[in-house]
Length: 216
Image (cartoon, rainbow, N blue to C red; front, side):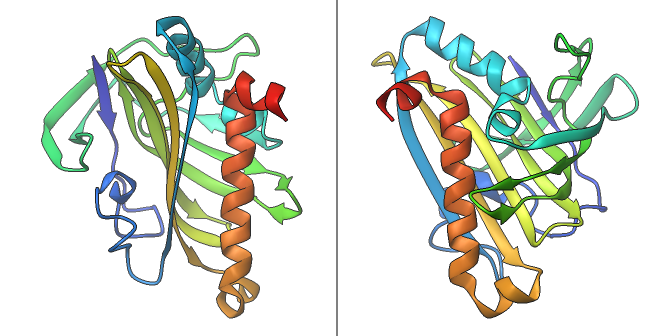
C-alpha cells in the first residue's frame, strides 16, 4: 500500500481533500459546484493495473488533450500528512518514501506535492492552470490522486481521479470535483462551468477507458 498526502497553503481554496467526502454532492465547499462521474471500464486485475499505470503517468490529462508543462516533484523523498479513506474520513498520518518514477519521455509520475502547469482546451473550454497533487493512493484495489488549483485557472477547486477494482471483479473509474468560479463569465453563467466540468470528465474517460473509445 502506498498513500501520500501533501497540503500546502499555496493552493487557492480551503477545503483540501474534499473530493473524497461522502457528502460532497449534498454539501460542497462554499460557492462551489460539485460533480461526480463514474463509469465501469472493464473487469479483472489486468485492466485495473493497466488503467492505474496510465492514470499515474498523466494519461488522463494528456490523452484528453491537455499539455503538461513544468512538472516538478516536491522536494525531499518523504512526506507526512493526512490521508483519506473511501468515505472521505481522515485517517492516521502516513509517511511516503519511494523512488521517483518517470515515463518514457522523462516526465515524473504523479506524486504527492508535485506541481505542474496544464495548457489546452477541451470541447472549447479553457483548461490552463497551475495545479498541485494533493494526495495519492496506491492500494491493492484502489489507485488514484487529486489535483488542486494553485492559480491561473478560470475556476478554483479540486478534482480527484480514482480507480476501484471491486470484489465482483469490476473496474470503475470515478472523477469527482468541486469548482468555484474565478472568471467573470463563469461567475455570471454557472451553466458554462458545469459544461466545462462535464467535457473534462468525458475527456478523462476517453483517455483511460478503451471500452469507451471503442463504443464511441
